[in-house]
Length: 125
Image (cartoon, rainbow, N blue to C red; front, side):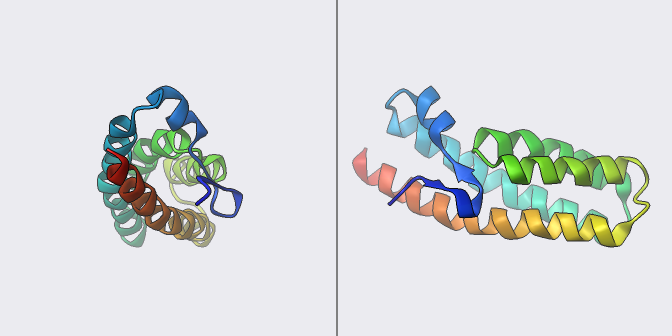
């Protein structure tokens, strides 16, 4: 299985580089991502649905470095656009929702891939 999937905006080379061969580090990092990311995505989605721009801004800001760490630069840039649009008061909610949904779709697919990679790395421990 390839750990780099451009179609999914996922490149784990940085994670592998800093893990320096430690499957335990990789598994722990992926576990943290799998735990935190769906919560942040849900928070953003709920905040957008309620036009709660400050909460959407804050959650988007928290999600951004996680996406970068896991090699999702397209999603990271898109969630930054969501963050900035929410910070500006949500002037174009339809565009914000569209961008958020792009990120959510990509991240949801990546969560499945990351679960598989985690299981593979756990089996090697």
